[in-house]
Length: 207
Ligand code: GRF
Image 1 (cartoon, rainbow, N blue to C red):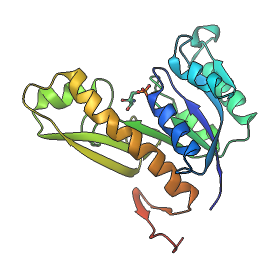
Image 2 (cartoon, rainbow, N blue to C red; image 1 turned 90 degrees about the vertical axis):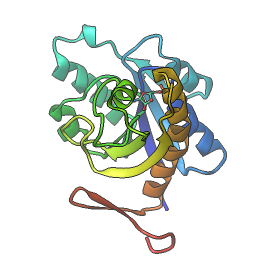
Image 3 (tube, protein in one colour; image 1 turned 60 degrees about the vertical axis):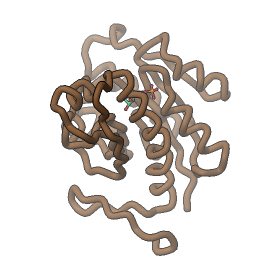
Image 4 (cartoon, helix red, strand yellow; image 1 turned 60 degrees about the horizontal axis):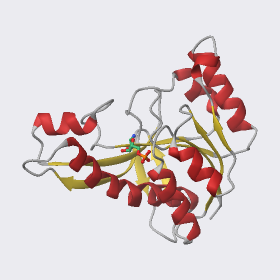
C-alpha cells in the first residue's frame, strides 16, 4: 500500500476535490494532494485547496501562444511537485495527446454518465434527451480520446420522469463523491490491473 501523491486539476466548484480531501482526512484514502491547478481564476476548487494549505495555481490559457504551450506550463508545474497521479476533477478543458503522452504518470477523470454513453459536454442533457432510465458516473483512465479510456469504477442512478438537468446532475454528483475517492484508494492499494482496455480489480489482500 503506497501513499499516492496527487495533482488535481479542476475548473469549477471543486466538490470532487473536496470529497478526495475529506476521504484523506477520514483515512478512507491513502493519498496526499500536493497541488491543485485550475484554468479558471474564480474556481472554488482553488479556494478549497488554499483553505487546506495546499499550493493552488490559476493557469490562464490566454497567457500562452497555443494549447501545447499552455499544457507545457501545466505539466511543468505538476512535475515540480513530484506527483504520481494526475486527477481531473471537473477540469473542463480537453487535454491533447501531447499532454497525455508527456504526463509520464497515469491520469484519471470522472465523467457524469455511464461511459461509453454520452461522452463529452452536457452529459446530463444528453442522457435526459435520449430517454435512458439509468445514468451515473464513470471513473476512468485518460487516454488520447475524449472520455474513452479504460473504466475503473462506475455508479448507477435512476433517471426519473420530470428530472431536470440540475436534479439529475445533483443525484449523480453524490455518487461521484463516493466513487472517485474509492477508485483512487484502489490504486493506492495496488489493486488495479490493466489488461488492454479492461481494468481488473484484484481482491483485497491479493495485491
Ligand atoms: C462533475 O459532474 C464532473 O463529473 C464533471 O464536472 C463536475 C465537476 O464538479 N466533469 P465539481 O467541480 O467537482 O463540483
